[in-house]
Image (cartoon, rainbow, N blue to C red; front, side, top):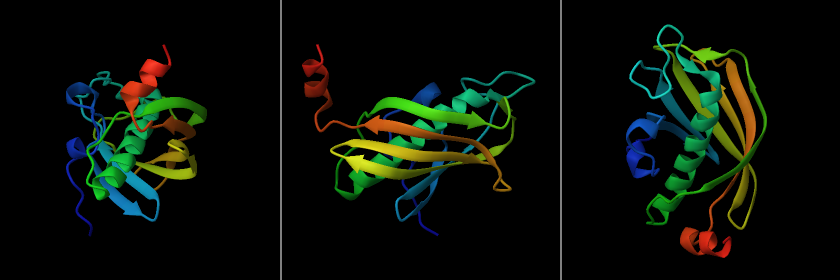
Length: 151
């Protein structure tokens, strides 16, 4: 089994906004993460769990971790990427329940000069698909220069 670095070494999210627990797989270009739904999580609602719309952010953070793994392979630190949009976010329920283990899988579909589209899925322990989407992201070579150019 492959050992992966702590999630904090792969993405820039911290404290309450760090929503995924760890990377559990990287095969070919597919990266998978894991989270166990807990009552101390930012979006947790007592008696209900975490709203399924938060799955979109689980997908986005797994994309960020995938990029962090690639950058780590090159000896580079994680950086901020930009979420451009989401198509067809679909969920099979309205909440993820306390104690539930979710596996998020991201697969790059196309990539061109820092812009990438990913097929994303969230699965339960039985492998049932709970959510799916296509997410578009962009990581400029120099975020500061890119943001200045947009003013």
